[in-house]
Image (cartoon, rainbow, N blue to C red):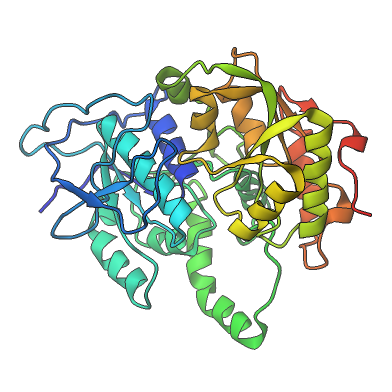
Length: 416
């Protein structure tokens, strides 16, 4: 039986895994890597997601089938990992990947898992979706380690599966690393004592949806209590973030300045062009597709953009329409954009709509000469089904961004 790790991290997206690596690298984090033993031979990934350099993802052949195995290292990564772990040693940090079902996310997660293993961390690939009983099987497989861990790190406090795992947590410390701008809403909601709800989520589902919410309410309430520091139970809560947030109620805050990314990648070669960064605001039902296309076309013309870095959740149909309308080269990154931009080549100017990268790229690209610019979302672009919180939340993402250039209002036209 594999010994339980003293620190257990749960990630569901490539960005979360990147931020766990940043947290582990930061000064004062007692989760340094432990060397790992030799890995079994890899087999081709069933997802069939190639990386940008044409190297397919790999995963390991193991009896439990829970680990993605060794993938080809991403460009800029170390050529090989550390030596074997001493017999009987307990790993300081084990990263548990709870992958979503979409192929792009899974491909990026496999590449990030390879980087984590190159750093000496143990990575466990645990399927928790895709079938009716997958969540329960995963919960049973993880329960012992969750109860034994002294520190638990989570990347998405809004995840229902993570909240379910939190009902088992007995850890002395709970750490939240960024899953993007959602951290801002997490801090605001816990400060107000509200239930945890994603900012773009609107009510729905009729009576069945309300019944599910009522049945899930005790789990959600337990998770909210876990995120509240408790002196009498000696439980500490830390937020490790690049977002403009302020800790409250006994929480501690450490700034994620992407020191690991800057140490491992770059600096990048700069091109003369402008790169645009895509967003999944259309896919989440916040922004109207036609309005978004018009905004991208206007930005392309005004700034002479040549490349469009797609968000991993953007649909192929939407990206084909953008390419036809603008002539942009569509790039689907195989790693989080912070790593892609840091290793280069990258445009001397990067233009984004309100999103996580307007907060993270200034850290990752500090000292490189790259200008990050942000274009506001005009309220006229919002769909009728967008949540009431959407307008103020998106404006707050822009207004609180540091070291970025704010584009003039005419750079964000409405569709006619």
